[in-house]
Structures are given as C-alpha cells and as structure tokens.
Length: 199
Figure 1 (cartoon, rainbow, N blue to C red):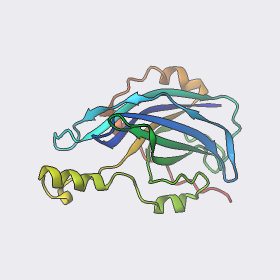
Figure 2: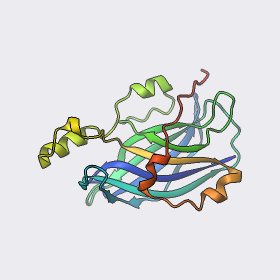
Figure 3: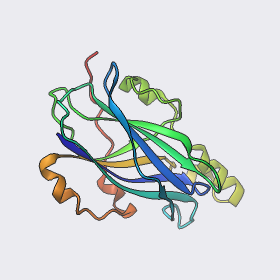
C-alpha cells in the first residue's frame, strides 16, 4: 500500500475564496473504488509575482491511505479541483492526472506538482493526449496585466494552476506526516515523469 498527501494548490485567481479536491483512482479501463471528497479549505493570498498579490493559494493538508492497492502500471490518480468565489457554490474548475507506478510496477514515490487542465475530465486519457490539452489559468496573467497596467505579459512568469502532492510508501507515512506545509517549499516538488503505459 501507499499514502497520498495533498499539500496545497497554487496559481488561482484572487476571486477564488475556497477550494475542494475530489480524487479517484483509475486505470485504462475503469474506476478503482469510489472517489474521495476532501474537506473544503479557504484560500490565502500569494505574493509570488513581483511582490503583487494577485494569485491565490490554498493549503489542503489532507492525507489519504491506500492500504490494499496492488501495483498496476496503468493506475493513475485523478484530481478534480472545485472552487468557489464570493457567495458562490463549488464548481469544477480544473483537473489533472498523476501516474502512480512505473513500468516495473514500482510506486513513483516523491514530491510531485500536478499541472491542471481545462475540463471536461477525461480519466482514461493517454499521457500523450494529456499533454496536448490546454492548461488552466494561463490567460489570467494577461487579464491581470491589462487591468493593473503592469509590465508586458512577456516579462511575467507563466501562471499555472497546480496541485502539490506527496506520494509515499506506507512505511514512510509517519515521518511524512510531520512535514511543515508552506508555499515557500514549492521548489522541492517536481513534475512527474512521463511514464510509458501499456495499452
């Protein structure tokens, strides 16, 4: 078995006030078990772009044990991000996929940043098709620059909506549970490898 730690979400626009993740396991054919709805959390401002507070982040701080899951090289973790604005209801905003096992059926443990895509959710999509889908939230940078009369978009870093996740073996879960969650540690997370799945 293994444990998934959902740490935080970054790259949201300032209109977002609360977020919720819905997560599930899928292989190339079907869903593995029932989706898990994580608790709703509130956002906090992020001043990561030239000191301007124009993006939002949220600490998720949730842990999901998966104790009886046999290794399957075609098994993926699918993450759905729901958000709400002032007085609004939660609605699906974006989604992403994290491969769980390599071609040798070994857990791909580590700290991962999952780049989120535009809906609709397609859990059985191939990695090649996934990379071709449009990212969510890139256009927000352009909107911010125009409204605030800030420097050219070309001078700004790309704004990406991402979920930061730790994937660990059960034996390491207790140690990982003591990790201090902060948006200042995003540099410790990497993009997951492009795992070649068998069809």
